[in-house]
Image (cartoon, protein in one colour):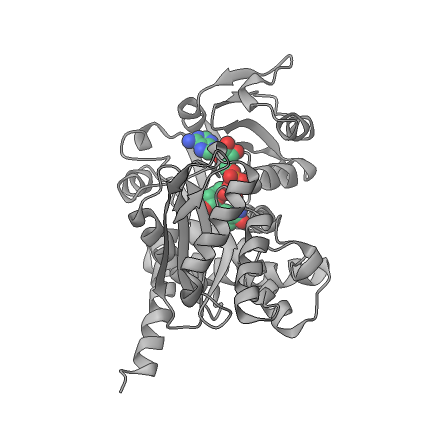
Length: 376
Ligand code: NAD
């Protein structure tokens, strides 16, 4: 994608859009902007979306897209041009009946607003349902921004009920303090849970007595790094140290490949709740399993955002908007039903929660294949 930069130079950017499956309905998937993005990342993330939609029983397929770009190096004008050009390049691959766009790493509701505008201008009419995670002002839904964190909280509560844990007496560690990390941290804090460590790209802080999340949100939103926050009980730690802290729940909510074969044997928690997509590699997964650490897989744990994205799409198509109570109630129903099935199958077949989740999801995709048969 050639872009005229603010200084008059011309730069070429590379971007991708991958459809993994449209078997069960139009695909849905986020768009991420990252300097080290590869086509393989996007393929893997599109694959995850297919099985996330299938596991949650949402009649959509899986896709993902992105641009290889360091957003910090672009002005807002350049970012807008790049986003618009990217949308124009993939215009024949997207649409409410083909593939629905959503925000992801380093993209937000403004990105989706520009994309929806390009698509609508080409079609000659407003088509809000081409993207989800839009501003509330035109076709966005209440509860979307908070959905991942809110959904993770429902799953954490359900897990505590299964294991007879009192959630207020747990030590919780969270990696990442963006959209997902901040909402789950805030929700846990408001529910009197204790978060003992938290981090962002530059590192984190640790306090055995528990962190004041409200103060940390203000600190972060003011543009500061978590590691620079100080009060009487906090100590700065690296992201690696944070992952290895002894705790009940570890919530990786930053990026993929954080727990690998290199550090899996040092992980000292009881349960990992995957907020990010793919934070645990498959080699690490096997090590964690041997250590008896329970891993709630991403396709279940962070599925709240997908549920509410789907609700946004439905609301756009019907031009009828729901109240927050309905959004959260319907999300909770979908997530808890999926959690229950995964939990039961994992017990019944003596497999990990991840394997159980994939068994259910793959079975649904395979059954659709069987029932649809082969064309012609
Ligand atoms: P975000 O950009 O808002 O936040 C990411 C956070 O992680 C930031 O605080 C950043 O500083 C931190 N971070 C980045 N690299 C890090 C590193 N190497 N070590 C420690 N911290 C690091 O992104 P987000 O929307 O919160 O998404 C986070 C993850 O959750 C991604 O894997 C994304 O695919 C997944 N996810 C997001 C949503 C959503 O609705 N936003 C839904 C489902 C899954």
